[in-house]
Length: 137
Image 1: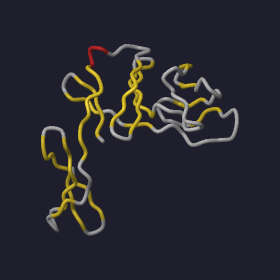
Image 2: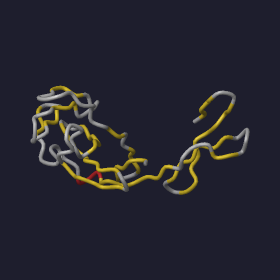
Image 3: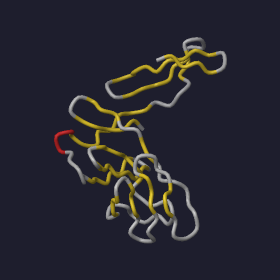
């Protein structure tokens, strides 16, 4: 994949089995942070209402399958940091059990605030590798 940034032409390239680095071929330097594939779950274990909380470095994540769709979101409510592992899922919305804040599980958008507004829920892109699903961080 080519990426054009200013006068530089760079490419994403794999530097190992599970790593990607952005390399500038003009200056012959690495210009991006190396990302690594982290396996989250085997595809065979997934089903509707599946939920798994995962901590990777500084990231607190939650893998959720709703209506046949898999989503990876931050595992704490952005309002007050309450764990979302026991949250209610209403349609495609995730409701925090502490104050009732609701977020769209696919986009992270705040759907309902019961107190002061807060930012949306962080979502992460999933990566599928053979029989596993994971994330690049």
